[in-house]
Length: 498
Image (cartoon, rainbow, N blue to C red; front, side, top):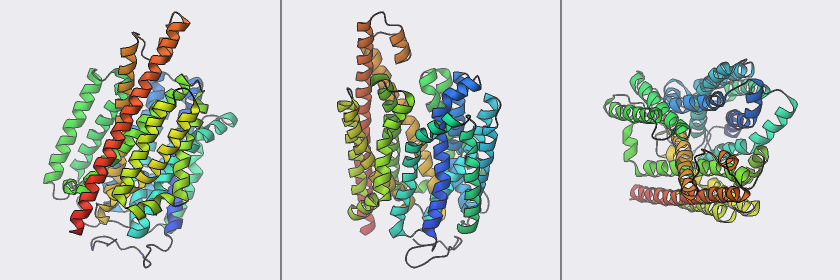
């Protein structure tokens, strides 16, 4: 990886990169794991929060959404700030803000205080998620970067798998605030380690910050994500959702126009002329779409169709994450990516994700065995496709814009996550409503209003059919997205070779 003359030089060893790169990767992945664990643990803590803080349903939703809204709105701005002012500085700032937010959350006495603390944690989370990937790009050379990014992406799966288990154990022995306070020693350890080990790097070009672009991107992304989050609750045609979505689209349009005319743009729109970048962007959105949408459906499948309790249901989705962890920590995933190339790895990975979704839809309706097979196949696909696409995005962007690249990657993941839940949830509800004439908004409410056992069975069968349909729609979308991304990336590689 070449270094721009305007980029602060990093200590290198030939040919591998920074001499302490693997130790640094371990430190920053520990910080990332803390952020991811916190979100999955919070899902398990919702009953305790509802009971002990007398929180309403709306309060609980905002405890979850405040973090996501703030983080998704700030990702691009955080990445740009890291490139401009220093990735090490912003990484340390993110750890400090996340630690202080965790302290405030753990000591909260009311739902409002906890919601405000979660918003503060979202600021720290945005800084961490962008600077971590940017630092990885800076300290590893081209040959080892695929393996490093694979390990980085594996941390997400590890957090997903371990979160429910750790949360359940902690809540059995401590009060709910402990799930936040446990972040503080990890944040302090991370601060010390980052200060001692991580080299500073920043892009010196464009000393005047793009404040207008930062404001427009933050408002636009927050409005779009808010519409996606609240759509299932308020209805997609409600004024609240439509106004938020329209505001987001208009403001993001203004952001694009501003960036095209800005002398020092926060996001260079010419990136979108790069086929390699566009292919990776398309794939990243669709793998997030399929993954998050399918997991949203899986939790309902396990609880409402197969009858598992919430914690048991969470644990039974763990094989997907554990498959990703095993394949990437043993190096199988990165080695295959390097052997067959990024386009082929994305095509194969997304095909496996699609096949896993189809297996869950067609074989998981009457027992966990078919679902387990689908989860393992999906995990193998994610282990191949996610690192390959993240590497493709970062490889298509100049090294001096690594923070912006990480911000784009995170923003696409957030957008795909929300879109997956929204679209596949809408398919589920539409299919369910077409099969049974019920006015209830959820399966439990519909079952409660049923007059007989036969009607309850009919309602349950209709819901299972809706799940199957929506999972198959997700499978088709993921397969199509993977093939499109692979074709675009292959064409880009051929053009570069020519």
